[in-house]
Image (cartoon, rainbow, N blue to C red; front, side, top):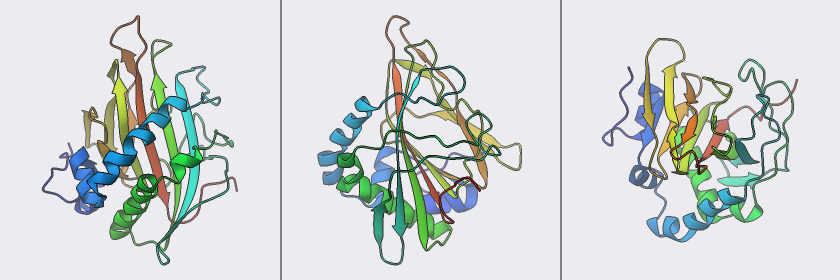
Length: 249
C-alpha cells in the first residue's frame, strides 16, 4: 500500500516520490500560498456556482446523475499569464476512457464570473507553479471540470468509466462539498504495480494531486443516506498537460 502523504511531506516531494499528494484544507491553503482572506471572501460564491450546473447529456450508461460545466485555460510559465481559451469540446482517446472516449463532448461553459474570479485564477496558477517544480513545463494546457454527482436516481457514479488515467501530466481532484450521501471512496493505484490506497474525502477543500503517468484513480458510487432525500457530491477536477489539449488526430 502507498502511504497517504502527511503534513510533514511537501506536496511536490509527495508527487515526486509517490506520484500523489493528499492535502487537507489548511495544507492546500498554505501549500499554494493563497491568502486566507481571499478564501474567506471568494470561496462561498465559487462554491455556490455548483448549484447552477446543467445536466451532463453525454452519459453512455443511461444515467442522469451528473451535472457539469467545463472550461479550458493556457498558463504561460515564462510570461506568468493565465488565459481562458475559446470554448471547446472535451475529448479523450478510447485508450484512456473506454466509456466516453473517442468523440467530442460539448459541455456548458463555466460561468464567466467563476472563470475570472481572482481566487479561481490564483488557484489554477499556483497549482501550475507547483507542478512545474515536479515536471518543468513552459506551458500548461488546463481543463477545468465542475462536477455534481447526485443520488436522485438512487445511485450516483463519480467515475462511471472505472479506474483510469486521463492522458495528461497531472490531475487535481478538489472536494467542494458533499451532503446526504455515503460511499464515494477515492481509490488510487500504482499504474505499474499492485500497490494502492483508499480513503473518503469529507472536508470541503480536501484536495488530491496525482501524477497521471504513475497512478490510476477512481471514486466508488455514492448512495443516499436517507432514501427519501437525494444527496450530492461536488468536485472540481483540473487536468494539466504540457503538450497541448487532447483532440482527435
